[in-house]
Image 1: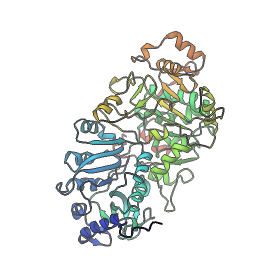
Image 2: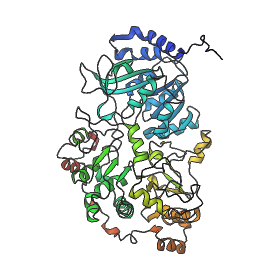
Image 3: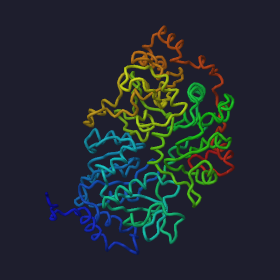
Length: 557
């Protein structure tokens, strides 16, 4: 019988944390409050070279003051940090690498910094761990990428460190829990320190320090699209989606990605959708941010429930006044949560629809190109067929029935399939072809020494492609040859599209594998802005009864 070795110290991490906190002790003003002017000193006291550090960089709310302060730290004390964070949308996030404070990056979404991320990877300023999907990165926070120190943000705190994250809770709970329950240190920047909070979203004993930031944290209205910028082509694609996919399969639960196509779909629900008799049959349950373009459909009674990844600037009052639809706290405001919304988007929804920058001849797609590393965000979680799903639904079963029964490793057991739709115009920004022979992701993998090219959605998960040419029903293709022919048939005048054979396309149309607008009974001349329930931001404000308050840059009246 072996005896436990009592000499081993099982508390090295907590002892190290205690030493760091002791070094920071003189900086505390009252309770857990540290003054903004002492922030750099606080970071130098608690962060060590080589630490895994998380700066709350979400899709929308940013711990921007803490990011700026970390850039001012003495790099002889703090260097070679391994940054783990959802998004790197701020200049200050990448300045850490420029300044020699950070060395390695594991992230999910690059957003506005996509070009600079690609450049830094190319010239060796960033050692790239991986481009993750959100849930994958969150999972690793609890496994092998646990933050030693996390810098988060909230609307309000009290002096005991309790946090109110409000409308934009986003990633805060998952970051704080992973850090604090592994003896890490949590520092929060807040817009104000108050005596009493509207509600407690993060308990104070999970937070080590709170700092009232000199200015409110930055929020990006990432999902706001001005209806005035929706084109006739996008409306045509939206009509095809509603009639040929949403209506065809009876899709009730879904996630809409960011973009003008999904905004167009949302805005023609009360017009074209109603004309097709689809109200109550589609779009009843949604996992999306509070898209302003959903207001008309909500007001017309299309939607039963929406759970949100984050908030959306200007939608606070509207959302608070629709508690039957949104998840509202006892204080009367939304509490979004990215981890739970991603989980719902992965397992509970029947369909994902979004766009991409490139699709190859096999149907693989990516938003990571040689010159831009936009990252994936949640698309790979929602744009895949989750093999763990066990609850059936009509749309899921119908799509599963279409799949050819190729050699399967499950015998004759029936199985459903998530609808994964990519809606794209054949030529994207700058007239770049969306359909390509080989994804730029291969070049990126070479530049960044990655073992695999960063693919956003794999071809075997993709069930439908919608372009101005029509819909390719890839779920109905019996083999790879047929799939490739269906992709060519809707790829337009791109190099891939020009290899389509007219007789092959004709056969695919007769088999219902490819459908053009005319096959769907859609008159393209009807695809005009007259179909939009709201034609500009002002219309959205009117639909909301004045509750929607668009950010200044969208106030074009």
